[in-house]
Length: 360
Image (tube, rainbow, N blue to C red):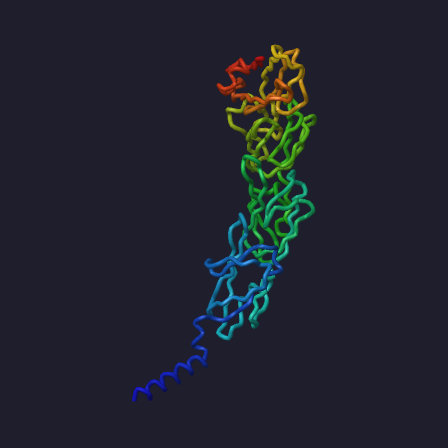
């Protein structure tokens, strides 16, 4: 009797398997997303991430699924598709422009082509699916959804341009960005930025760095196109002496902390005047004929030297006994005074004044 029952149960299991009921482990489908600009994807917001550069096989149960693509700083986008009981894929006709492979075992992720024209911006690199040169025009194949281009701002961090790519390949963005961006309704997003002028000719430093991109000479006025947000100015010194300012989205004017009024000017305009603060270096009491401040060209010690510096740490280099040179440091405070560590008391005088005297 038990043998009879066992045989019939076994026959039923075999029959169910033949009918396809035993597909709980799902079907093996392929994802071909190689057309996309290199990025990653996963299924149903869970599990492992996969590279779009590899056509891989994936075991998925029959039923609805979501192909989730990463949009970097813009977040994620979900594209629905279905794995059929016969191991083929299907999807809504609304997604015919961005997907392919209906009725086969391969879901082809086509995406849409968009262009980003950031050639007007004053950056060496921008980031969208990897850091890249903003010139020439950047061509991307992406999935519809929200995306973001990232512009570096040095010590200030990063500024973001958020935009949307529609299923037909056109771009869109918030009305507040009109004037900063162009190209709404087309497949090309033009990043114009906001035009500002930086005048740092008063500084003793011969170069200045805006947003950690490239050193620029201060002998002339700098004309820059920047993304609205926080930005940083750096000058050569013993450390990164960043001075922060804000470029407003709404009108392209400049703002900065009230505590920087003595070293910056131009609030409410499109011109930032970097004035610095005047300190004096008195090296007449030392034997060396030349000293170097912040790595600049050698300066004679027979006169008191007036220098226009930014707040922060600075360096002085002078000849050392027995040859070579020695390096020491001092600070310029936010209120324009000099300071230094107690370990340098034998080298300097003038703490909390605007004159630093060098001792032999």
